[in-house]
Amino acid sequence: MTNAFIRKLEAHGPFSAADRALLEQISRKWREVSAGHDLIRMGDAPDEVRLILDGFACRAKYLKNGKRQIVDYLIPGDFCDLHVIILKRMDHDITALSRCVVVDIPRARISEMLERPALAKALWWATLVNEATLREWLVNIGQRSAPQRLAHLFCELYIRLRAVGLVSESSFALPVTQKDLADTAGLSEVHVNRSLQILRQKRLITLKSRELVVLDAPGLIAFCGFDPNYLHIGEDTAVNDQTLM
Amino acid sequence: MTNAFIRKLEAHGPFSAADRALLEQISRKWREVSAGHDLIRMGDAPDEVRLILDGFACRAKYLKNGKRQIVDYLIPGDFCDLHVIILKRMDHDITALSRCVVVDIPRARISEMLERPALAKALWWATLVNEATLREWLVNIGQRSAPQRLAHLFCELYIRLRAVGLVSESSFALPVTQKDLADTAGLSEVHVNRSLQILRQKRLITLKSRELVVLDAPGLIAFCGFDPNYLHIGEDTAVNDQTLM
DNA sequence: CGTACTATTGATAGATATCAACGCTGGTGG
DNA sequence: CCACCAGCGTTGATATCTATCAATAGTACG
Image (cartoon, each protein chain N blue to C red):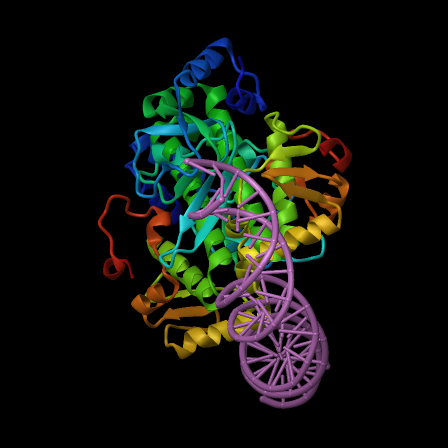
């Protein structure tokens, strides 16, 4: 079985049999975390790197006044905390949004991965795409209107989830509350509600019972000016809106 | 001569003589870029990785409607585009804010660096701190008020610039316009002007002629709730506001 | 000593937050 | 199986923040 993790990493260069064997061994022993529970807490200095095999989680930072900013959504195949290999402590929390299946990879295994060029490159790739995504989020919050911010987030999740096979019929599970979206987009809960109504009125999306349906992909893309380049999926492949969504 | 680059990288583990020799060789051949000129443009796929030895630059993404979001400030010792080793193309621009001294490191040299554990680790460190900084910027724009956003930015620059010896007497060169600050903080130019007035009224800072003076460091820190942890400078060292600024 | 960029100011419009209430829904225990 | 409860979504009214527009004042630089 090739899981989301291996599929995602291998997207940018084939692995040798030995590489794959190592990855498969890594993802053999997993555990479950139920929705709402923390995978890692700020200040933790874990000895393993966590990896999500199934489920949805978010990375968030809290202010002293209780405000929260979600800075990433973690989907199957994403590493939670590659940082702790180098940076001793977590500077933020990771919380499960749905039931998650997680593997804990010991540092030693990561070191082994870093010694294999193809795997090391894959880890660099994952890290750098993360960084590029953070930059785009900054653009999103800094420069776009409330409804556009949400639209952009949905476009991104669509592409990322599709890359791991979690989109069907233009729709996908999105186990978040409007408050979560608010804390992602730097908005209030009420304003998220009203912004979603705008997106619905425009017949761009539907979001009900934690299920997001993209009704009009080109429209959604145009509405927020989404350009998937920053995700560096299918590098050097000619892409356009039609092929993408 | 140990330049900012080497000093910064070495902050997290000593290098061997060979490591240092490689670094010194790398930073030997430099060139100048004058203020306002681009170091790299979106879409470029350069064969070298650029590194700033002196000067100030910014990393920015543009929207189709002309809006701009600055997503990072680059100071001496910072890599411009480690990404292009792995991700083929730049997905943003880098522009000099002041006259810059830059070195172009051929890919091959970067590969040599990655083969040396201490140097590879240093590169990982730089990348992961970048990522952590982006997360904190997201918190900044998403959750703080306009004056707080600026205060937080100033705190960060203070710490980062001090780490490379560019702060003296609680002040440092900050070659940016109010429009630049606006595009950094997701605000309008006018509102930045008024927010700066608030910071001045509170006797926290002074900003004139591209020189920022921190008048009241503890006050500035308290005002925006700055916590330097995310910069991962002096890991595992007990730090507090007093020792920091 | 213009000229162009940058900073500042005032007035107004627009976007978003906050506050408060109510309705819906899914789960739980009796 | 129903009643209740808690969390979530929705709505309206209002306050606050921030953008926009337009004009003026500095400032740096050729």
